[in-house]
Image 1 (cartoon, rainbow, N blue to C red):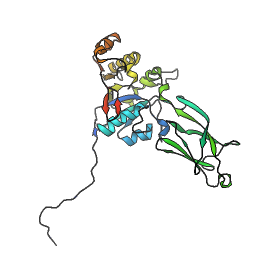
Image 2 (cartoon, rainbow, N blue to C red):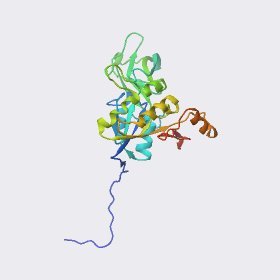
Image 3 (cartoon, helix red, strand yellow):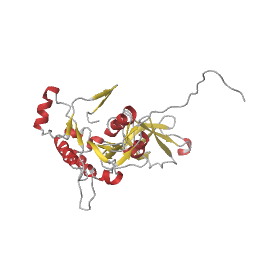
Image 4 (cartoon, rainbow, N blue to C red):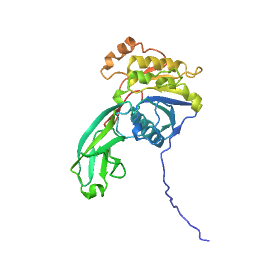
Length: 287
């Protein structure tokens, strides 16, 4: 048997390690691009241990800050590497959308492109001037770099491609999620939405919510007040802290007066000033 002398090296693949908490868990009420998710969660607490969990249940688009879930996921799983977190998505693509009807698209080399940001491929209907085309027979549709690419089958219309097609679809619009939907409610059948789902987290996962946040929306006094109430009594027995944002138009020198005016003064309310910045992106203080 041969014997090696000297110093040798052996390189192995490395990966970033995520710090995991086993005592408590941050809970974020968010708007999420669930039209991109394979198992979409709407008005339901879902724990996430890694970025792929966020993509699976909520959809994920790095840099698309129309959705607050993307911001939260970037900070926790790409920059700070902290897990787990619980997300409660309040956006429903069937409710929060803008309708686009019969948009005229130019066909080039059998392809047409929908460039509307946040267009929902699941709502897409494609027509020519005479009839509606059949998905996966007459045409195929895929997401491609933030757009929807429509490709006509090579045998469509006996290979004679039209110059234009008409597309009808919904554009998901997170701006249509209201503060009332973030605050949530309980209906006559006991179904909970929004912040009313916070107390479901401990029962579902046996982890105590230790941080409560609703990025962007918590700058609204009514949301800040309900977050405080929830933080004071989580699942009856526990306390948490509520991270509160501020409106964009509040100057630093006016910040203390604004907090006093809006009664944001509870010991469990942490009202932070200033946006975090990474590159060209800005993040709410609560994130």
